[in-house]
Amino acid sequence: MSVSEKYGNIYVGIGGWTFEPWRGTFYPDKHPQKRELEYAGQHLTGIEINGTYYGSQKPESFANWAASVPDGFQFSVKASRFTTNRKILADGAASIEKFLTQGLTRLGDRLGPIHWQFMATKKFDRDDFAGFLDLLPDSQDGVPLRHAIEVRHESFRDPAFIAMLRERNMAVVYADSDEFPCIDEQTADFTYARLQRSQEDIETGYDAAALDKWAAQTKAWAKGDRDVFLFFIAGAKVRNPAAAQALIARL
Image (cartoon, rainbow, N blue to C red):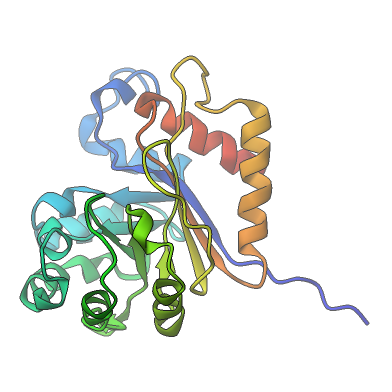
């Protein structure tokens, strides 16, 4: 007797929710700005919070964001630049603690992966990077944490880097970009993808053939009960909400 394939949950969205060109293209005309997240939550299934990269947020903000979206919605949270933009990563314990204790666990069951993004100039140093990964906890305030690691230098195409992520069940970010290398490896029990090639002259950012391809890839990632977090980022940003909605419709 055959056993049916199990699939994980798939979350598709955009980076942030406040962007003036989305008013009238994604958000309806005259839609209250204070209710834009609520609207996004009704039409997407995930959002990558980027404001946390630049500065700490209030615990009440995280709680309010969680209350604005429906059950099953997921926020990923980009880690503070002070945790990743440093010469010696393993010396960043205090910065990591400050980031993790700002109140992000107030997102509760809406909290998706923590997104740790490194500059394109950061090269792979085996000992230092292992020391950094060892600073990332499995939980915070009793809330389980998942970690997605985005590296942007070719030196990370190293079996040692892939192995250290697999040992810790941390995902290497799949970045589809013209600027940065794409490391296509499954290193965790979830996948984190950032698609960055949307085009302004296409209403949905990507043409139908490309969206069909990404739908098939997303479903393939989800096989084996693996959750997938996919965000349309950069590119023609004005088109990213339409791209996300078009992909959701194909899943």
